[in-house]
Image 1 (cartoon, rainbow, N blue to C red):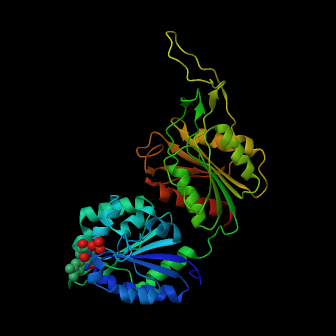
Image 2: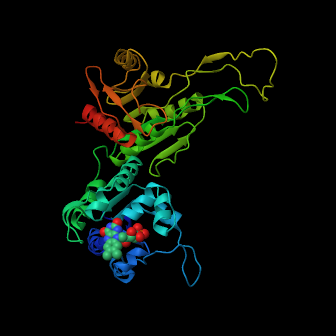
Image 3: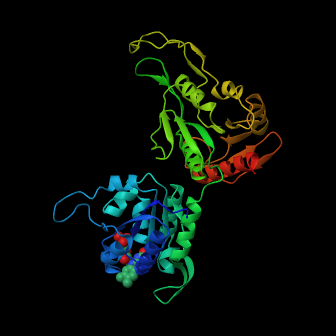
Length: 398
Ligand SMILES: Cc1cc2nc3c(=O)[nH]c(=O)nc-3n(C[C@H](O)[C@H](O)[C@H](O)COP(=O)(O)O)c2cc1C
């Protein structure tokens, strides 16, 4: 039973479909999951907390604090506790708030605090579902990496017929079973480098680049979702690492090299997605450099070429994947980088493609091996990560 022992946080919103959450809880508990329920205030109009707490065998929470004692219902701890958060039914109202970072109830605060994957099963009337604002919120939410459990087509509570019925509890159970079944990469160790590196000029200045780390973080999470044990070595970013990966924060290329070398030998899969500086200042000034009247020259020396140096230590069976960001002769340049660095696959981003590369939530890639090239459409970085991990599996473990 893939759900045995899994910690599931179920969010229930104000929808006629809230009665289905009782059935869902029964199924989850029967399958061995530990279920905690958070209801919105509106959900209380549709089903009682007594029903859901009896079925889940845990107190149901709605408010930020307990009335009698004033004790805090700790949304941060709840978010960290869960292996997965499922919002079912997810109302149009709550989806809109989730898409916009609104945090005016316990369910939303917990959603914002959760480091685990989040699945949501919308339920609403067909016109609410089709409304451009709802559709745009869905795009935003899936772009953030949340997983949509599609509503079904059929008779709705309003009597209208269309799309908007919440997925049946059995289907949500099946989705969760699939989600938790041992992944194709179970037993494999993966190392991912991500983000930029900062090369210090003096104590306050550095040479860096515009990498946000989003692509590497998404790949690390996707590798974990497919069952791998993941180490993520990242330069400075504003991102929160997935809770389930071994996260190593570094600053410079030198530090990234040291951390990557430590884990390279024991890794089955290595993805070099970091934008590592090629050069660093030859000397770091001990004190802040003062502005002078003459031009300033900073002498640069090469940094470690992490992928190339580790590529030389590659063991049989180890799979390495590199990234190439090119502006001209893209495919030819990427192919020669693949050969020079001994990669199995290389992910090519072109700065000529709108929405690809640094800073965007989307990316458009071409995946090259020594003998093939496959172009993908513009997608969210989460979806691109899924394509890259699927390609790794097909290349090395099919
Ligand atoms: C009878 C009834 C049924 C409703 N069903 C739905 C529904 O299926 N989906 C939905 O998004 N909103 C539905 N609503 C509206 C929500 O309850 C309302 O937007 C509420 O503010 C949602 O709050 P919540 O997102 O905090 O749970 C319904 C309202 C009523 C009165």
